[in-house]
Length: 458
Image (spheres, rainbow, N blue to C red):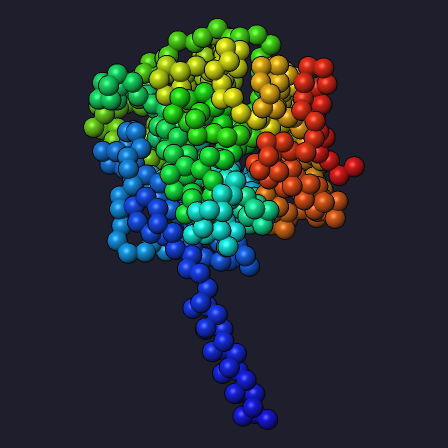
């Protein structure tokens, strides 16, 4: 009997080895070389930490993203790349308990990496032509990363949509403009983090066929600062043609009238910050460590923000280390582009959560959808997430919908119910259906019928 069991075990091992060897290789040629993914979940391939640009370090700090540095052989894409430099979350904040209690992963200025989740059967099949979604994380342009605990593409891939998440430069490393930089770079500097996003989108367009994706069907989506990034990309001349659809979460809507253009003051703001921090040359700034620079400029950032708001600027205006209208990379603001009809003419899915209030949600969302639906037949759809999460009194807080739209409820400490899982399924189906068809499965939000789909467990 023991001998028979051993023989059976040997046969099973041999068959498993044959199966493993005969499985299609999860190796894909991309810009720079070949990458090999892994199958962490049955039927879903994931490729982690693929570089989409050269490391922006040393002399490349505060420069436009440069082409990927090629590598030899096959690069194993089995671990996430370093995240952008940022300060850790305050342990006393609600968000620390919710999302960051395990601490931050490895951080580095070498942070321009992306991650791909695809159905295992589509890898290597350029004819699969699956829809693609590019996710841009939030974090006020100063924090966050593309593989946060809420973010995972497994459930998206199971529904036939390839999900790509990206990292991009944040804070003063991503958005500082400065006179010497402008002189060095043809008269204009800043918006490096936005340019990273554009290059990531171009990378997807050029490389996603190897994973089975359709380069002509890319939905760009994001939440909070990520949603604000989508608004910018829908205006940028380099990114507009590459976007087939857009999902904007908790990033505002449309003002009731076309805002007055604001003058570019990036160099002025950057000089104020660096003079206050005691830096006297670009060489000195590039040589300084992240922690040192962050600590030295932080009080001056707060002071400048206060000055801007005192002068009548909005919180968005005061977000000085974020994307800014520079007349070139970002030629105008989103609201102006909507009113002058130069925003990307694509389907939009836009919404907010209860705690977003008027600033990031409110009347501006149905106003945007109504305006787009008057000007285009592509469709603009709205939602309102109002599920008060179980476990405490936090309610439907900013970012709470992420657990649901990524299908990662099981990663949370909260006592989610069957109704929560059903809501998550509904949102996953709606978001991925939008990527496939341009509609989430409910009515568009028009002036005549300002419909907003309520997302709750009731």
